[in-house]
Structures are given as structure tokens and as C-alpha cells.
Image (tube, rainbow, N blue to C red):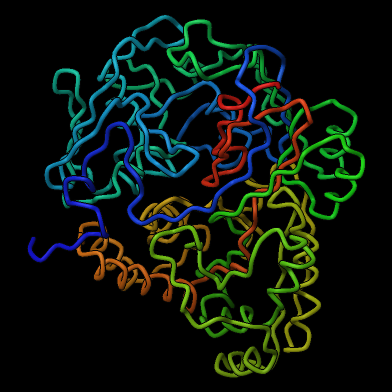
Length: 520
């Protein structure tokens, strides 16, 4: 390549090398409040009430799809690379990583780490763990990450991954929660195994109900995993989660209903943690199913509701308006100047007319398991859409089993995404044609070509243009309504302490509250 340019202060070597810390190029993250400044100490039983979980959940890392299994995984597993609370990439099982050209990546595997079973972790385990997500037979949600991978091999204490083209963001992909390092046998992992090398060992697990884990006495990180025991509880109903915290049945809850924040604060029983990032609530439409095959129908729906009303009433201000764009304000190439969509019944009618319609009737399936307030959001959208001649019938479906029975099954439903730290990760997971988690089944040839080209483009200006054009395509031609970026709103008992910075890349401190937090 020629004429490569880099962000100010960054060299090509710096972009492609990791060790003590590798920062996301140009990634600007907001400062986060500290809930406690005390030194961590060991002990206690930490109980977390989580608004996700299903009786069909399991141990296969390629199939993890919501906060309960993500947090459960972070408790018992480690990954090649960790995203620290400040957004930096830091070593975990890979004590360093390096690439001379962005196409061949060398990960130095840490020695002295053991699985809960006592087996020593080896580079061969890493290869088996990564290969679980490769190949035609793989059912993994992150299989698209590995489509460009041509080879994974062991070289002494290193694992060498070869891509068919440069990708400067590849280390970020290796931090994905689907990619824990698990023990391998004959080149394969057992996707039903509880064995991991993380801070906690599984004592019991009842999918859709609870998981209990005990501290790993042989954990290689002496400054992590402070609790004696953790208990993760599936509590799908927001009111039930709130009550569990107020009655001291749990120590932390996620997805706090913003309307209940003043109640919690007045009672003085908990602290509120509200963190902005790239998380967003959305309503995917199946682009294969009529009437959503017509982009004019999709555009009519995008203009037929009031985004600010949803931010005000559903988020109570704990978030911001989104423009059907899954790339958030914390992303490096966020397209802040893109034409914004506002509530406009006349524009909605125009697009209906372009589709050959004077009215539209659709059904929107929603449950609060998708996100807290999803049903109310659907009702608000339905009320506003009537002025455009659009009838949205809200089908309130059961919370339990939502992700198995409704998501990617019903043609129009509620969903949420935690966002991703880099654009390629978000787009590859949910918008690339044929991706397992392309929840709208949208396919766009121009988008797919740009996605591949942007991975290997190291000229920052050109890369920005590519990612902004992809954002425009998703926003104005895509099949997903994204009305709002939501803050992660959590409530913590007064006894719970956190580090000075709490991560904004995922909920519950990047799923790692079980490892990073402690009792004051």
C-alpha cells in the first residue's frame, strides 16, 4: 500500500502492535463516575438480578445472545484480549499481539494459566477455541469474523492467524464475548463444557433461572474476582428486579426503569449508574417479507414516529436520539453530520405513495425482555403512526423465550444491541449479507463491498468516508429502525464498590462486574 496516513500521534507500527495497552484509534469515550474509591477486598456473595435469560440458554459460546449468558461467560472464562474500562485493549490470555502488515497476526499466549479442571492452558487450546467459530458447519454468531481467516496455527508459544487481507481492527474482534478460551481435545472444544480459566467455577446452573459460581482459588489474576461467590438471577420483569434490590434480595440490577430512579434515590437504598456509549434499542423489519421488501415502506415507518418522545418517555433522558444508525457517538467514525430523520407524517405518506399505498397495516411484536420499556415504545410508535395512515398493531408477546421464539422469527419486532467498539465489528455481526445475526435479513451489495474494502484501508480519511457511507446506507436503505441510543442504567446496593471507571462498551461494566467489583 502507498500514501498511508494515521491519526495524529499514531504510527503504522502503533496501530498494528499490542502489549501493555493498545488504544482504539481515535476512540473518544466519556468520563465515567466513580461509585467508590475504596481498595478492593475479598469476600461476600454477590447477587445480580438480570433482565435476560431463557430456559433454552446453554454453554455453546457461538450461541450466546443476551446479558445473562454474557455475564455468566465473563465469570468463568477469559479471552485473548480484554477491553478495559477506558476503552483500551489490554492483554488477557494473549500477553501481547503484533502484526507487520495487518494480515498476519501473532498472539503470544500467556503461560501459567490453568483451567478449572486443572489442565494447563496451551496455544493448542486457543486454536481449538477459535476454530469452533470457523467452517461451514459452524453455527456461531461470529462466524463472519472468521470468513477472512485462511489459517490459524501454533508456532511455539504463539498463535498465528492469517487473513486474506489486512484488518487493523482484528485484535478488537478477539475480545468478542463469543470467543472465550476453552480446553481443546484433538483440536476441538466441547461446547457443552462448564470448564473455563476465569475467576469463578460453576457450582450450579438452571437456564432461565439462576447460576451460582464460586471463586476460583487458582485464578491467575490476584487483583480480580473479589467475591467468594456470585449468584446470577434471571428476573425479566422490571418491577420485580426493582423490588428484589429494594428488599436486599440482590445487590445489583441492570436495565433500571428510568421512571423508578427517583424512588430508589429517595429511599437511599441504592446508587444509580447511568453510562452512555453505543448501545441502542431497535425494531428490525424482515427485508425478505412483504411489505418490508419495499424500502419506501421502511422509510415511511422511519418517519412515522417521534424519536425524541421515546427518549423522553422511555429513557427519561438517559440516552439520546438515534438516526437508524447502529454506529454510536463513542465510535471513531460516527457520522454526526448525516441528515436527521424527524417525525414527519407527510414524508411518511409520501413514501407510502411511492410504494403504491395510501395506508399500511403491520404488526409489531414486543416484550420487555427485548429492552425495558419495549412494549410502551411500540405503543407510542403506533399512536404517532396513525397520522400517516399507518396502523401498527402491537402484539405483546411473552418475555420468556423471546430471543428464541420471536427475535428473527417475527417479521417486525423489538431488539437491542450493546453496540461494538469498532465499526467493522458492528457491521459484520448484524448487517453483512448472510450474517447469522443479521436480524433484518437485509442485503446490500454496495454495503458488503465497502465493508470488505474498509477493513484493509489504512488511510484514515478514506476509511472514514467508507464507514460514513455504510452508515448512510443502513440508515436510509436498511431494514432496521433505530430510534434511540440508550444509556446503561444500573442500580447498585450501597455496599457495592466499583473501580473509578466503569466500562461503557457493554452493560454491567462490560459484563465484568463479577470480576471487577467488590463489597466496600
